[in-house]
Length: 118
Ligand code: AMP
Ligand code: ZN
Image (cartoon, rainbow, N blue to C red):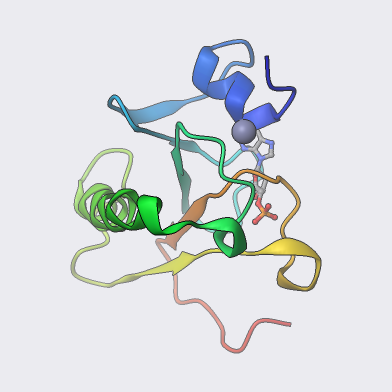
């Protein structure tokens, strides 16, 4: 069994505030939100980072992105970001600021976000 914390969240071994789940992905609220809306969309397949995405994962990656924007527009957990917008972030490895080595899309919204990142 994977010791990865996001794999444990998927298996229900670590509690999370689930927003969405289907057979290939899982979405949940970030435990340390950086904005009023901050949730993560992850594949159930353990892909360590975007830099390890393989050709066979292309369809999955597209569906993750599609679900991320769909959830961002939902009035409930997604925060209804369809009008004002949101930011979709994928940190990859050390210089990208990745701290959990399981591919995830951050969805941030509910306030105007600065750019560029520090
Ligand atoms: P990153 O720095 O891009 O790897 O993002 C990892 C994110 O996972 C951070 O924003 C953390 O706050 C979040 N995180 C870590 N552990 C948990 C957890 N148990 N439940 C929800 N979010 C978590
Ligand atoms: Zn994992």
